[in-house]
Amino acid sequence: MLRLVNLELQKLLLSRTNKILIFISFILPFTVLVLSSIKINFFGFFTLELGELGIFNFPLIWHITTFFASYFKFFFAIVVVSMIGNEYSNKTIKQNLIDGLSKKEFILSKFYTIVFFSLFATVLIAVASFIIGMYYSSYTEASIIFRETEFLLAYFIKLVGFFTLCLFFAMLLRRSAFALAFLFVLYIVEWLVFWGAYEIFGSSETAFKVKNFMPLESMYKLIDQPIQRIMMTKFPGKEDLAYDYAVHWYEIAIVLGWTAIFVFLSLRLLKKRDL
Amino acid sequence: METILTITNLTKKFGFLTAVKDLSFTINKGNVYGILGPNGSGKSTTLGIVLNVVNKTSGNFEWFDGNTSTHDALKKVGAIIERPNFYPYMTAYQNLKLVCKIKGVDFSKIDEKLELVKLLDRKDSKFQTFSLGMKQRLAIASALLNDPEILILDEPTNGLDPQGIHQIRSLIQLIASQGTTILLASHLLDEVEKVCTHVVILRKGEKLYSGPVDEMISSHGFLELKAEDTNKLMTFLESKKMFGKIKVEDGLITAFLDEPMDAKSVNKLLFDNGIVLTHLVKRKESLEEQFLQLTDN
Image (tube, rainbow over all chains, first blue to last red; front, side):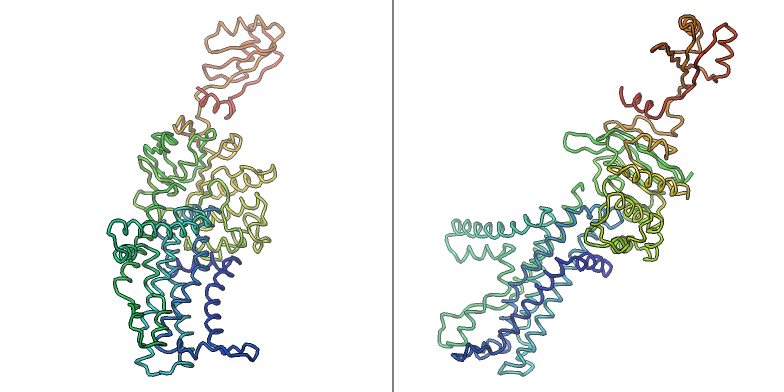
């Protein structure tokens, strides 16, 4: 396993484009997080300090940082897609196989690298959130700090799932740009499924339940939007704002299911294909 | 003799097109094999199948004793197919290092093999800056990294300039002289003639011949003759049964031999019968002529 990750890391880190993209995908969310936590003075008119809003309080901070950081996954998605696209355009996939890498090892080396980078991103966000939280949070008892850390697990699963989806699309289409465009197509298809389900069942609630099983939606649902939750903490009286934002085991199970399916399909595809 | 590769009844279909049809042959250790065939005769497809990048439709192939999986066998094989495929942004050394990691070979081999193909001074240049000849030599170095039992080359001189072709050929001859089994696919006949001891000839995916180069055609060669009196010579030749087909072109008579006979005895026979020759050459068909004969009909 280490050998396979090591192989892939050499392919990735010696290319300047990939290095820049990887750097952006990890450092940018980190920087945004740090910047948002410092006090910004708007020319003496007023000061903006997000920390004052209470969003960096434990355990809310886990929810907020993981939700916003996951938007930066698109940068690494480009890396994932291009690491397959380049293997096809340079025909190195063929040479790798001839040199003695099995088809299974080839897919696994990509998948392990995805897991490796997702884990790295999760650890980075966890550490940054922890430090900022310790600085701003009004509550610093251990029991409160470590409450809701399941958002970190959800973040990790979400990244692995999304990148595996990118891996599968890249294997399917062999071209980086097509694979990225296909993500958008899938997004539309999921709304079409929603619409179809609405036509059949006649209620948007059931239709949403169906859509929750779709790959992109299931990944999105892992970490629900935290805005409404912030509002709730600001206006405690508003009962109608209440919603279910927790990470549920079945949400994780659906995404893990899709991840397994995508890895399996990628391998099937490579085995069936004449290179 | 130790067997390296056995192919039995291998067939590959691409839709309606049959690229390889019921192909069988065996590769033994220590020989230099050529797979000859016109473009599109299934050479690369056959190599692709045994190298695990193309899926076979039916039939079978076995590496070594037959108990080795293709995945493990490929670690004892060095192969380049069509074009040299490397990562353009990596240097020669980095590319070979990656191959070492895949094959599980020690990095110390890299310099040794770069020296062999005379690329050691360019080891820190990026692959994309290499000329085609250098890329092809790097590919050979990469294929040799694991000191393979067999080296498979698919059209190694394709697209190279005369110097490049010469460099690659002497390299192949050098490697062959060190006892490595070589399988060379090509449509260039002089290449195969110069390098190979055995040939497999394919046409439209079917095997036409396989065996040693010099046993390819069972003919005894032919004579080119000229004499002052062409008619007398013709009449004499036609009366003897050891001469088969005879044709005349611009006073030059070409007579194919049906029995083994050397030039000296032909000369003596004709002189004893009062015919004085002005020109006598005994030749065997070149590989090219034999190849065209085999693949034309």
